[in-house]
Length: 166
Image 1 (cartoon, rainbow, N blue to C red):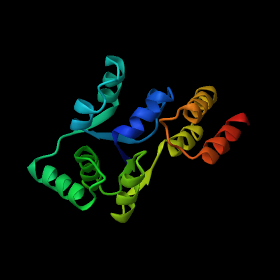
Image 2: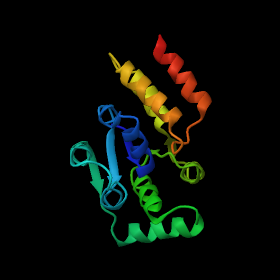
Image 3: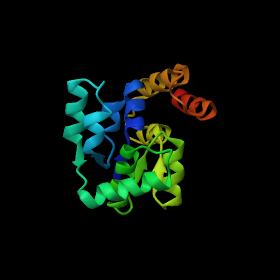
């Protein structure tokens, strides 16, 4: 089964859109660095964190992994150490997909030959499921389009809204 390693920005956007639990139903294995849960998802409810822990493998980096993350941040200073953790976890799982909403993370992943996608790709994957939750996906898309803190391409959101009308 293909692995998705998620950074916090993608999980936060999925939560804002109200489709975090739908995301966890996709036919992937989900992995998240432990440090992300412990420091970047503090606004998540206990129920949301429990769902993440139930459906996602929590990866802990050893000393070598932490040093690799620091090296990534040294090479790409726009990234945080937690971003580096997600990158290292993705590299530890060959063929993994890195899920991120961060443009700099995406650029770094692509230069490292790591497949990378964002939450709009997740919407497309959810639309492929039998009996997709169209109404929830449409609400998420409209929510993201109206949220000034969610930076997703308006044209792609509109394209997906049109897809959910059929």
